[in-house]
Image (cartoon, rainbow, N blue to C red; front, side, top):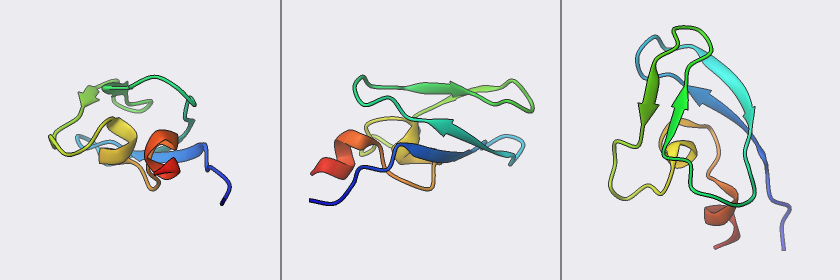
Length: 66
């Protein structure tokens, strides 16, 4: 089994800034707050389970396990 990556780089859909964030192992994160423009953004695709699956460079730990 491969190692679960818990470091994600989120990409703000409003201002385009990128910032690192550590993903929690459990829980469903439906929104995030941009560190640059302070916009709170959330899931925009019904197929994605959380903001990491929608806006980051890696999928969330739950999805990585599948």
